[in-house]
Image (tube, rainbow, N blue to C red; front, side):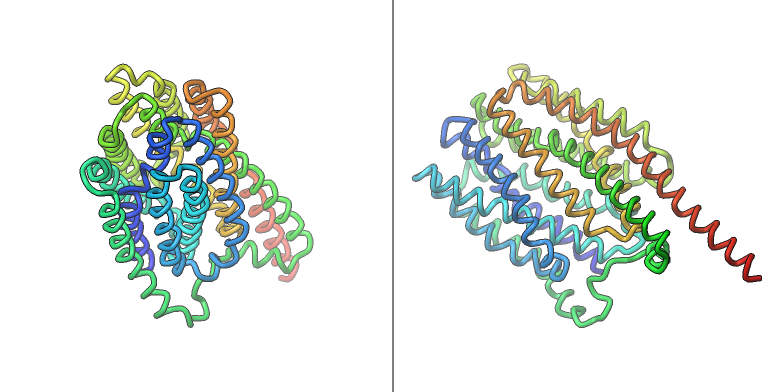
Length: 410
C-alpha cells in the first residue's frame, strides 16, 4: 500500500516541482547573461547537499513519510529566490542555492527511506517501476513548464506548482498518521546472515570487513556516476548560452524523458529475467556518445540524436548500479547507510565536475562527462561481479560451518 502511495507522490510531485524549478539554472544563466553564475550556483548547491544530508539523515530514518510535506518550505523559498533574481541577482542566487540544496536532500532522503520501508524483500524488483513514475512526472513537467514560463506570469506558474505538490503529499501523510504507532513501522528488513553474524565473533569480523569493502566500492561507483549525471543540467545551461529559449529546452527534455521512460520500462521487465551486464556496457557507451555530441548544438540533428542516445543509454546503468546495490545492502543489513553513501558520493562527484567546468568551460566538460559515463558502466559491471563473489563466498562459508556443526551435534 505504502509503495503505491509513494509512486503516486513521485509522479505528481515530480510534475509539480519541475514545472518551473526544472529550469532554475537556465533562468540564472539567462538573467545573469553568463553561464559562470549558473555553474557557481550549481556547485554551491551540490556542496551544500552533502552537508544537509549529513545533518538530516537521522530525522529521515525516523520521519521519512513526513519529509515530502517539509519539502514545501524550501520549495516556496526557491520560488521567492527565483523572483528576487530578476531584481537582485546575488541575493536571489544565495537564497536559491541554500533552499535548492535543502529541497533536493529532503526529497531524496524521504523518498529513498520510504522506498526501503515499503518494499521489504521485494524492493529490488520495484526500483525500475518507481523510476517509471518519476519519468512520467518529469516528462510532463518539462513539456508544459517551458511553454508556461514563456507565456504565463511566473508567479501564477509557481502557485500552480505549489498547489499540485501539496496534493501529492496527502497520501503519504495519511499513511504515516495511520501506521506510526505500529512497532515495525519504519524498520529495515534484516537478513538472517546478519542476525547470525552478530552472535559469532568470527562471522562478525568477516561481515564487517565485507561491509567496508561493499561501501567503498559503491562510493567509487556513485562518485563517478555523479560526474556524468549532471550533464543534463550542463546542457540546459549551454543551450541558454547559445540563445535558445525555455520552450526549446522544455520540448527537448520532454522528448528525452519520454524515451527514457520507455527504456526504463523495458529494462525493468528484463532485469530479473536475463543477465544485463553486457547491456549496461553497451548502454553506457551509447550514453557517452550522446554526451560527447552535446556541444555541437548548431546542428539540428544533434538534438534528435542526443535525445535518442541518452534516452536509451541512461536507464540501464542507472537501474543496474542502484538495484544491485540495494540487493546486496539488504543481505548485509546496511540499506539506509548505502542510500546515504550513494547520495553523498553522487553529489560530491557532481560538485567536483561543476568546479572543473568553471575552469575548463562547458564545451570541454561534456567530454569529461562522457568518459565518466563509459567508466561507470564498465566499472559498475566489474564491481558487481566482485561484490557478488565476495558475498556468495561469505554466505557459503557460513552455511558450511553450520552444516558441520549440525553433523557434530548428531
